[in-house]
Each structure stands twice: as C-alpha cells, then as structure tokens.
Image (cartoon, rainbow, N blue to C red; front, side, top):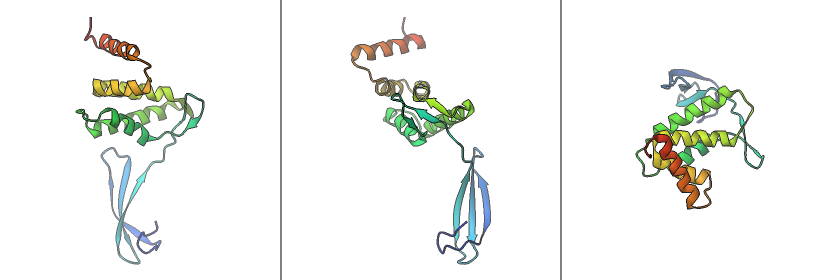
Length: 155
C-alpha cells in the first residue's frame, strides 16, 4: 500500500477492525518512512448484474442511484437513512443471489417500490408516481385504490 503522504511503499498494519456487517475491514497503517498513519478500507468486490433498460440499453448497477431515488421519495417523511441503506444492502444481495449477468430494470424498480411500501405509504406513492409515469389522475387513483385494497384498508 502506497503512503498517501510520502508515496513510500513500506508500511505496516497497526490495527484492523471489521464493520458491524463483517463486510468491510478498516486498517490503520503506519508508514515506515515518514512514520505517519493512514487508514485503508478493504471490501469484497462483488460483480453486480447489468441492468437492461426499457429501451434495451445496458447500464451498470448504481447503488447511489437507488438510494438517492428512495431518499427523494422519503423527503420529510419519518424514514431513517439507515433503513434505506439496509434495504438497498438486501436488494444488492438479492440481485447477486439471482446469479444472472443481466436483469431487467423493472425487477429493480418493483423491488424498490415494495421496499418503500413497507417503510412508508406516502414515500411509496411518490416513488410509484414517478416510476410508473402516471398519465393522469385516474391512473394515480387506480394505484391508490389498489394499494388500499391490498392493505385491507378499503372495502
């Protein structure tokens, strides 16, 4: 590991710790040349499937894009950031476990909506209105009615 201060390659690990999920190793290192300490993070590189967009284009999985979309839907709602992060962690595991090289973007979109629905109904409706691109109020109302019927809140 190259020292970020002097560029020297000889250093030693002073301390190593795993994060709470045991997925990232934090290492404190000491440069043998300049004696300064620096931190490195080691994580397993996981190959995520490519996403097939509606128009046929391929796009790499972008965790930040998923979290950002959910975060926008949850603005001013009682949903903690760690709930969104935990959901996206689980979604990434699901996508990896599918074992596919490519996955339709609609699979991801539907799972994001399911996750938001479990966290907050308002955030779900916000996300669904953008994701499903409702053309008019009737489509929007049909989605709400379907949501109420499924949840048993409507007779």
